[in-house]
Length: 195
Image 1 (cartoon, helix red, strand yellow):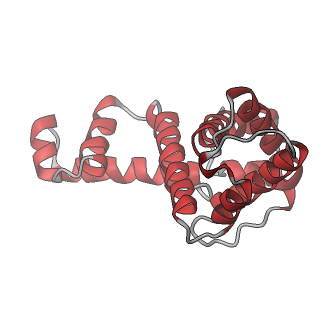
Image 2 (cartoon, one colour; image 1 turned 90 degrees about the horizontal axis):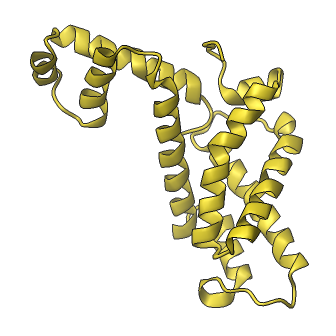
């Protein structure tokens, strides 16, 4: 894919293409599957099937999604889509054993629907960590090794720019510019997905 300032969500809503849909699937499949296995205690096959339902629902509903520019809007919307798919899944399984912690699907759904609950905060945290890691990996190849290392040490490890500059043989200003360039690219790539 060529570099573009349009975020993934904007591409999918304004001019969807196969590459953008592939990226969405690659980004969210492991997150949703893992979450369903850990927190909804679904068997691997059920989690895989339900993940496909969530993604299919996203394909149908994303053109109508309107980002309200509030932090976490897409993340909250994705959680709602997942809740609805999970609710439908349990309705279809009515009468069959369910093994989640506490054994109460209604309790789990209620917790997920409450944006202030501990489980919803876990969803938010896991989402943001997963998407941030994927975005970091995605843009890493766009920068030289020294630019990336300067960014990593200052932005991710919290080290002082002067200290990093001395180690890398750069000026402190060059380190800060490297950090700024990578952060700008991350904001472009992840606009609307995180925070």
